[in-house]
Structures are given as C-alpha cells and as structure tokens.
Length: 176
Image 1 (cartoon, one colour):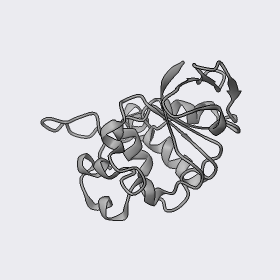
Image 2 (image 1 turned 90 degrees about the vertical axis):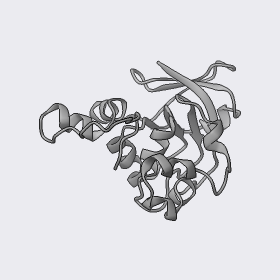
Image 3 (image 1 turned 180 degrees about the vertical axis):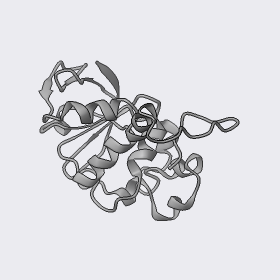
Image 4 (image 1 turned 60 degrees about the vertical axis):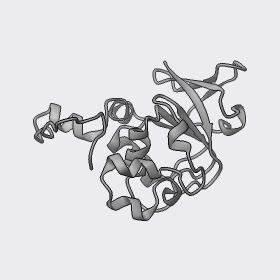
C-alpha cells in the first residue's frame, strides 16, 4: 500500500501542459522546473516526493514527449486518472511512474486529501472519506516495471545494458 497527498487535474491534460516544448532541450534537472508551468505556475515548488496526481479523462494526450519521466523526477508517487492516453501510459511504464485508470476517481477526491493505492488488488481509497474504488486491471509485468523504476533498471539487472556511469553529485533523477 502506498499513499500520498492528492493534486487534482482535469480532463485532457496534454503532454504540452506537463512539459512545454522548449524545456525538452534542457538537462532533466532543469527540465523539471517547467512541469505544469503553463497551467499551474509554481506547482513544482509545492509538490513533495510521494504526492499523487488525480486526473480526469484522457490524461496524457498529445505527443510522445517524456513528460512521465519528469513527473516521476518531480517526485510523483502515483498517477490515478479516469482514463490515460495509451502512449502516455506506455511512457509511464518505461520510466517507472505508477499509473492507474480508475473510473470515478476524479469525483472521489478533493485536492489535498490523501489517497492510498494497493498494487496487490488495485484498489484506490480516499483516507478522509473511506471511499474505495477498483482500478482497471493492469498486467502484473507492467505493474512490476512501473514500481521497479521502469525498463532501464530491468534491462540493467538482466545484463542487457550497461548501468549508467555514476556522476559526481548525481541525484535520484534518471537522464533520458
């Protein structure tokens, strides 16, 4: 079971809102400063490691830019939305951001409440109200990738790619 403070976003949150185009050319440590800058200026200074995003329908529509990586590197512990764009979901799996579709989830939370998610039975609970909903099924292999940091740690553990060389002062961020 994991839990975190909820940040709410509406329907059709696209990858341009999450990660503006000009920021794509910056190093990841600088890039994350631009997450949601267009629609929630200053949000990156308020979010804490382990916080959750609760989204509406069609979360992650748009381009294939690595917005999921930046959300993970900002510290988002889980994304739960009414529905998630397929390409964005694939990026969540690849970059190790736990993402679940859960019909009715947007109406079950107010911003600032605490959500708890069980990856064992894919339930989502509002800790303040006690309301529980079941997320849509996700294959165990995909859950393992999202919870295990994504595809790169898996490939490294199997000896299929070399680990990234350690850099002086390296943070927990993955560079893509």
